[in-house]
Image (tube, rainbow, N blue to C red; front, side, top):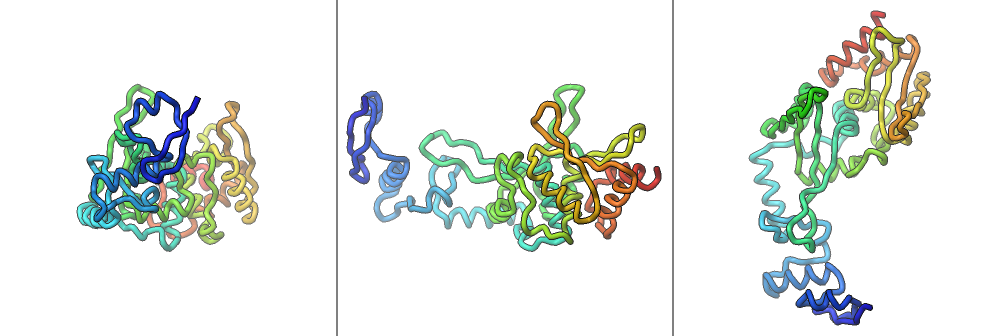
Length: 302
């Protein structure tokens, strides 16, 4: 049975179990009051670090202590000096940023930082990672974002069936906030949708990025097929509607496991039309060369 106790910060009445009262020296009605109490106690009344914006804007330092927004901005500036990055790359969406955004939708992952030791403190800020078996794609990301000093992590295969993969991580809050607005959210697999900024003129640049990450072309021994795999059925339906506007008729299938879907295009005419749409522009190296070569052999030469 819960017992009424008084919050040590705001004075409101809250309910707690007897074992919680015996275990805790102080009582608080929520984590907000705990944070304010800790801020006043650790720093004094003249320098309280806790505010109403603490939950959204505050970050944790190396010692799991809350930091002010000014110190966070200073650390970001020094981090940009050590590890340069084009933080305004996605402010204006053009054919280059549309391709990279599509590739991030396929192989990118927005994640939260590590949990601190103190469970009452918030998590570290957002981070973004891109992992690929093709180092060519990681080189494109580095070249476009101008993050030449960022380290590339190499993940060695555990067994025979795996391949060597390459990963690059980004922690800058400015570019991550913009990517978050464009739909790159944590646990995005089932919730992604085509951003409103992707107009019809930029759609095939965006789709080429998705194809380089989660697309495949059938082998020469089988009938020609162009496929894109995704867990989000809504995302593939949006792609299908866009393709219908360009007289390309795809079909949507579900895997037997029921966990994923694939968007497929069959027929020589449709595949040739698809190839011309994806690679008609002077894309200037914004593609995966091995997939383009195989696509060319299936659509043009065959």
